[in-house]
Structure formats: C-alpha cells, structure tokens
View 1 (cartoon, rainbow, N blue to C red):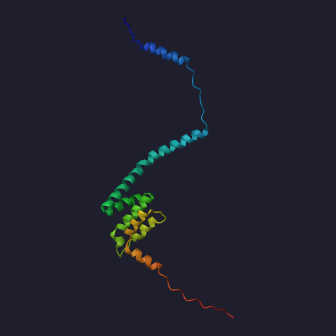
View 2: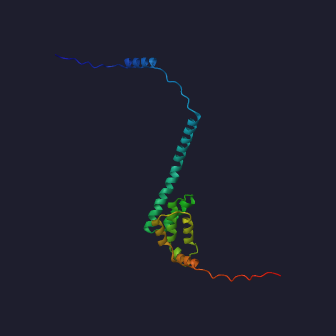
View 3: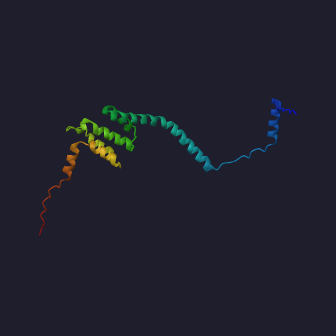
Length: 173
C-alpha cells in the first residue's frame, strides 16, 4: 500500500488573502493611557541614559590616565605619574584612590625627603589624605613613604612645653 504525501504549497495570493482575513477578524487593541508619573519616570531615565553616554568618554579618558599614572609610579617614573595625576585632580576627580595615589607620588619625590622642601610636598600629600579613612595596608604604605623630618616634627610637637609662670594675683585697693 502506497501512501501519497502532498505538500501544501501556498501561493503569494493565498498568503495575502489569509493575512487579510486575519486582520479583518482580529479585535483591535484598545488605546492605553499611562499615568503622568510613569511618563515622567521614563523621561528622567532617558535623560540619565543620554547623560551617561555623554560623560563616559570624558571619564574613560581620565580612567586611562589614572591607570597610566599607576603604571608610571610602579616603574619609578615619578615625573610622568605626577603629570597624569595633576591633570586628573585639576579636572575635579577627588576619589579616594586618586588622592592616595597622588599622595604616594608626592611622597616618593626626592624633594619631599630633602631638607629644602620648598614646595612642602609632604604637607600637600597630607592635605590630600586629610579626612580619608585608609585601611591598615594603605596607611602603613603611606607611613613608609613619609620623610623622616615629619616624624621629627611630630616628636617635637608631642614634647611638653614649659608651663608659664602664674600671673601675679592682686588687685587695686
């Protein structure tokens, strides 16, 4: 017994007629109105998305400079690292990582350890670190970079100063 299989071939005209029949019998979608807060939320999210696309290239450029400064610092090229970090800090990026790296760079210069530190590099480094909460590892690394004169100044500040003579008591009679 032989069975015949027939493949149903649909022509373009038949397919078009089927689509017309489908569109004629389907129910149209009802118009839907979204609340004003949802529309406002959508507009705000769209604005944030556009802002992120605009700001990413600028931030990406500074992120590359930060990474490059870290590489220069690790290689011992302090001048190049300083140049990159100066650009980043002048642009207004004051994250903890940027401030710590710049402090390390400033403390790694020979001028910070000389007796003629006219630029007060270690004081500038401490100014960058002011107000930061550093973890123990970072704090220890910074202490290793500090010039010895800083610790001498600390010891001098800790020594008690002679007490002033009490003022003479007495008044007019």
